[in-house]
Length: 95
Image (tube, rainbow, N blue to C red; front, side):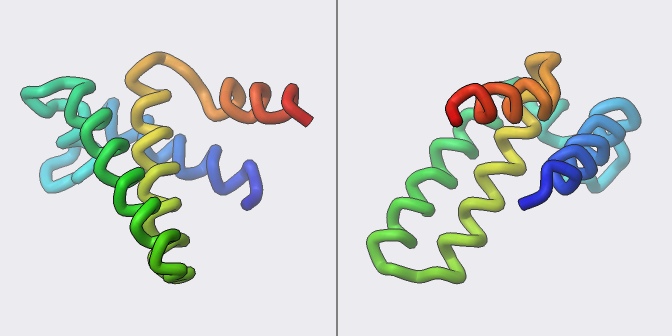
């Protein structure tokens, strides 16, 4: 995955956070009554689904659930005032 894809997706998430368009799932995460707990719950749910997909060796579902985790992680980073570069820098330091 290119870091450009992460940055582009993050830019879309940031725009949704700023404009809160009606009907946007992303905007609904920023305005949810549970606050950031809604995103944390989604991360837990998607992680469980990824584990089950891996257990079943379902490559298509592994890719799908992994993408869900990355998306919700980017939403959480936005909520915390962080950037994809924070994540990428941490990953780079682990080389």
